[in-house]
Structure formats: structure tokens, C-alpha cells
Amino acid sequence: MKSLYLAFQVYLAFAKKSFQRRMQYRVANLAGLTTNFFFLLVHIFVYTAFYAARTTPQPLNLDEIITYFVLCQVSFMLMPFWGTRSEVTSAIKDGSVALQLTKPVDFQTYWFADECGRAFYYLLMRGLPTFLISILFFKVTIPHQPTVLMAFAVSMTFAIFMSNAITITIFSSGFWTLDTTGISGMSYSIITLFSGMLVPIALWPEGLAHVARWLPFEGLIDIPFSIYLGKITGVEVWIAIGKQMVWNLFFIGLGRFLLTRGFSRLVIQGG
Amino acid sequence: MIEVENLSKIFKVYHHRKGFFGSFVNLFSRKHHVVQAVDEVSFTVKRGEIVGYLGPNGAGKSTTIKMLTGILVPTSGSVTVNGYIPHRQRKENAKHIGVVFGQRSHLWFDLPVQESFELLQRIYRIPETRYRYNLEIFDELLNLGDFFQTPVRQLSLGQRMRADIAAALLHNPDVLFLDEPTIGLDVVAKARIRQFIQKINAERQVTVVLTTHDLDDVEKLCKRVILIDNARLCFDGELATLRRLLSTERLLSVDYAEVYSDISISNAHVIYREGARAQYRFSPEEISTADLIGAILQKFKIVDISVQEPDIEELIKTVYEDNSLIVPCGETK
Image: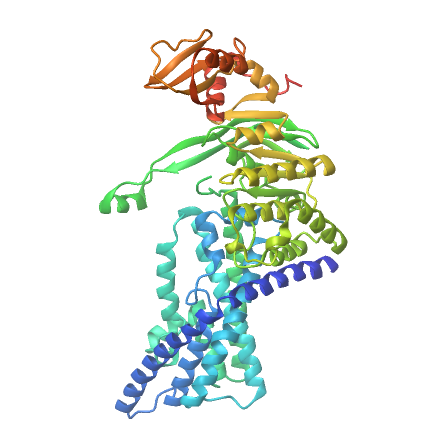
């Protein structure tokens, strides 16, 4: 138990330093806020135009749609596919992963810790400012029940965990192919679409929405945001979070398997 | 401390077909050839030894080091470091070794040196008192204080190297692997790092395995050297033995004050001559450097004179080309 606590301390320290490291670039980061708002405005204008042309009621009303995309801008930087790429992701490619292996740390846990620090940094320095400014300019819905907010927080945490578990899995393929541009590019498109990043799954045609519900990626964006908007309620919330949990375990397990196999056949470039 | 037996590592290198069409074919069939990076290498290193592990580029030095540190899995053969099998017990092994790769830093690029060190303190669970004590000693020897608060990305190469070596020793490892620790450093920085390694080795009985291209490093630090070339071990023994085995010829370059018609000197061969500049080859066994210079000064007026030792690649080439010089591991002890 004590050694578990000590191990936790190590990875907590990693997360803290990861946060601290990024704090050095906070001015550059603020400039990134502009980009957030640019994309937010594009989404809002497009949907406002759509909704003006429609008379039939939609599963999400315009305010909910706007809130959905505000949340997108708040949270996408917290996830490694859309946010700036961490050093760990390129560690396999350029071989600096070797240096990490000379230390008595578990690589996957180290990676998670590093990303948690990163996510927390972007939450504070990008996510919250984006949210606060958005409240001033747009009609952003805020849930009144604390339970909804709590469920959202849990679901969002799982979403961030899963985004990292998936990233580790994708990049582990680098042990075999040495170049992950292809596979990461492909996954990027699939994930962007099926997470509900571009269009909320509630607005999708029946058939395709069905496919999305069977894929893990809705757990990244659509599930937490639907919980926030009160579109998923009661027992459904538990089922949705349960789904996220199962996919998390799946990707963590798969990533772990690939990493272990990968390290055993590691070719360090330029070795 | 380190036992290596019949260690081999084979890499598969895939061929890439050229062009647009070729890259499609690559997807389905990839030809490869096998590269033997390390071939049946055996040696043992005792506690407290400093061993120079030498060889030309691509000889298999780094591959061996990577197998000793548990990063690479050997194709065949056995390795134990401190009683651990590095690739199976990577994390256990890692607690007892320190590693420095001259070309890459272990420190966190964006963090001040101090922060990196504190992180290492956590990783290796170094007790506070020992951490403070080590820091004090390292600071004294390497002047870390000058740049302790500076982010690693702003350090000079020499400073970074000093920080990296100190970082690798914070947890009192039993074995220290140094892969080209003085690469790219100036003379002063090199000397400082060598002194530090010597001192730590003497005081803490740290076993040091050093790979380098710098013959000075070897001369200052290592009693024993292991040479490998083309993946195979070709010498294991004392540096002095190696030197004796090789009748090391040296080169003497002279700039004469004027152009002489006959510049021959007994026991030295003119191998190059252009205008007032000449180069001689001589063997120290036949004529000492001092005598040779004396003889030249007696006959001619000179502007400049310098003696060159053959570099390490040259030495290794001699050993490897002459198979009679190969000393199997163990026989020299």
C-alpha cells in the first residue's frame, strides 16, 4: 500500500512538472485563444443559418447547439489528437523513448501522468477563459442541478483518459512502422467525425448514428456534452459513463499490450 | 558486476522501394536484409573498474550499451548487470544504473535543472539527506550552482553535459554508462568531466563503462579497454598492453623556415612534402620523439613542428586487420 502511495507520488510529480513546463509558454498560449474563437464563430454562424432555414423542431435547439460547440472549444485542447502534440508522442518516433526506459518508471503511466498535467494546464489556460468569454457573448446553457455537473465532470475525466489511451495505442504502432503519420492521420479523421466533434450525433441520420453509438469515440465528446445538456438523464447517465469506462479499460489494455510487445522489438533509430 | 556472454543482436533493415509505385509495393512485400550489430561478444567487468568500450562508428558500441541498460532485447546470449537481467528486469536494473548519452539529454528540456533533479529524486526515491549531500558534492566538483535555475534548453553544451552526468549519479548507482560524454565539448569542459568521473569512481567504487571516440578520454580514465569492430570483440585488456601490441607509428609535421633540398632524417620516413612543409612517419621504438625533433633542429631551421598520434579509428583498424593481435576475453587478466 505504501509503495503504491509512493508510486502515485512519482507520477503526480510528473503531472505537476508537465503542467509547470507548459506554464513557460503561457503567453503564446493566450494567442491561441483567438483561434478558439475563430472556429467557435464559424460553427455558430453555420448552425444559426441552418436553424433559421428549418421550421421542424430539432433534437437540440440553437442555444444547446451553441453550448455544445462552446464546450468543444473548451475541451478539445485537453485531448491529444486535437491539442498540441506532447513530446511523449514523438518519443517513439525519434528514439528518445530509449532514455525514458533507462529510468525505473512505467512508461504508460508516465505518459498518462504527463498528459494529465497537460490537460490540466489547457483547462486552466485555454478552456476556462474560452468558457468565461463565451458566456459573455453567447447564450450558453449552464445546468442547474449539481448532480448533472458532477456527472459531467466524471464523464469528461473519462473522456480525457480515453483520448490518451487511444493516442498511446495509435503511437505504439510506431514500433512496427516507425512512421505513424498515416495511421494517426486516418485515426484523426475517424475520431473527429465519430466523436461528434463536427456534428452532434443527435443530429445524424438514423443509420450512421447507430454506428457511432457502437464505436468508442462518442465517449470523447458526445457523451460528456450530452450529459451536460441534460440529453442523457437518470440511469442512462450511468450506462453512458459505464460505456466510457469499458472503452477506457479496453484501450489501456490494448496500449499496454502493444507497448510491451513494441519494446521487445524496439529498434532505436540511429542506434 | 557486469557479465556478458556470447551476446548478439541482429537487426532487420527493410528496403524501401523508390517512387510512387514502389511505396505501394512496400505495403505488401518488404525485402529486408539482416544486420549483425553485435556478434558473440563476451566480457566481464568488476566492481569499481573503468572500462573504455571502443570502436569505430557503427561497430556496435551503442547497441551493446542499450542491451546493458535494458532498452534493447538481445537476439541471443546473456547479460547480467548487478545480478539483474536488464531487458527482463528493466525497472529493477534501472534503479542501480546511471546512463548518460552524450547526444541526448535526460533532463526535461523546458524545466530548470533544479526541477529536473527534484523529479529524479522522486523517481529514484532518493532520501532527502542523501539528495542534499550528493547535490553539494556535485556542485562543488561541477559548479552546478551557476546554472541550477536555468531551463535546460538554455544551457550550453558543456553545462548540459555536467548537469546530465550529475543527474545520472544522484541515486548512487553501482554502474555508470557513459556514451560519448565529451562529444563536442571544449578542452576545459572535457578535463572537468574527466576529473569528475575519476573522482566519483575512486570515492564511490562506481563501475564505469565508457564509449568514446576521444583517445584522450581513454588515456585519462581507463586502464582497461575493450575494442569492437564489425560487431565483434577484437581486444580486451589493458590500454598499456594494447599500446605495446601496436607498434604505434606517429606522424611529425614540420614547417621549415626555407625550402631544403635534402630533408631526410635517419629513422624517419618522409611521407609528404610540399614546399617548406613536410611530414615524417616514425616509430617511437626506433627513435624517440625528443631525439627526432633534436635531430631536425640540428640540421634545419623550422617555423613550426607538431606530433600526431594515430587516432582511435586508426588504432582499431590496425588491431582488426592484424588478427594475430586479437586477444580473447579473459586471457589478459
